[in-house]
Image (cartoon, rainbow, N blue to C red):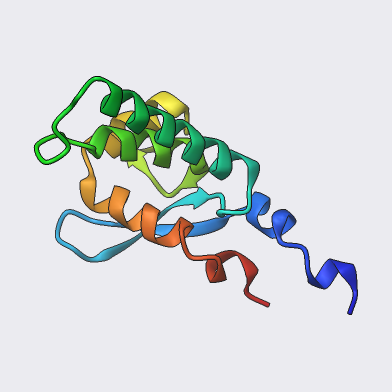
Length: 127
């Protein structure tokens, strides 16, 4: 078997489109390009998220009542490398980390969708 058939980082670094959900629940043509679990950015974001959780544990935060959504927003922003089809005022909205964080913080349904897509390796290794 060729070594190239066994490696996955290249396809995970390239990313995959994740089509976003509109407020009415339908899937839109707008998308974000997310990096896969075998990408460096994904691994680093996961490590940062784990460290944040450990810090919370050290501070005796009650995990039963703590809102972990901001951690998911930060994680998702770290694994998004761009987007397309997103407009504001009828004009294409330029992708920046700040605009991405602003969008994600107001769209829990899409945070969940991004976590689902980027967590499934098959979305990055399809033939």
